[in-house]
Length: 225
Image (tube, rainbow, N blue to C red; front, side, top):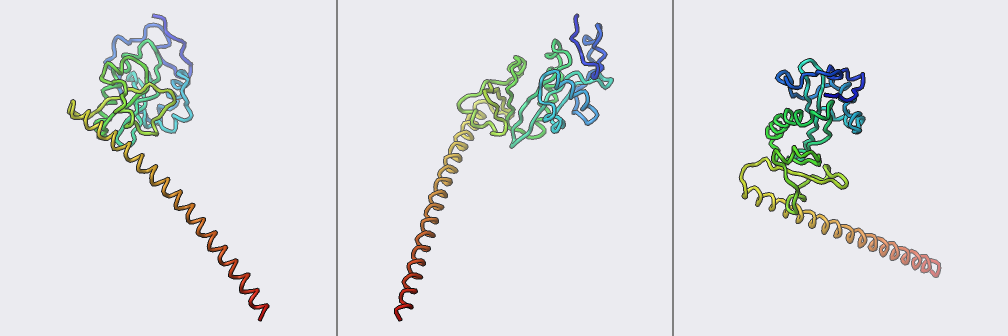
């Protein structure tokens, strides 16, 4: 097997032929710690990810290490408003990405369920995610996407974490409809507030004009008498 060129900073034993991916029993998936940051920075750079921004959120990341402290893979899980976004995959060896995903996914799913998340989202394109149950978003599910997750031109996949089959789909549809109604109500309130502001400004102008007329007339009256 021909291994890719690995930056010296990462110092992976797999940088030489013969790295034992066939014997992965000692590999473990775990939460990233501050001690992992130097290797994470290198992995993010290899994947052309925004390392400076991700470094501030390194606690979102789950990693695979080889049991000797070498980080072989990392994936982020952003939590927000009862939803989770799987993002920013990075692998030391791209040809082993599927094996690394298979190690990371059970931990990501367990973490999401333990946090009580209602739904997971991802814009990652790897077929693996459809294989574990993610599906393309629909007109009913897309409105459930938290605005903070939004990405330009993203092809979103989603996976509900609640049991319930068709019942869960109906609940998702209801939530989507309620969200649309809520947005419409907010727009109406905003429009009403703008109208009230305009009316208030008009009233202030009329009061000021009336006061000005009164001052002029009072001054004129004082001069006449």
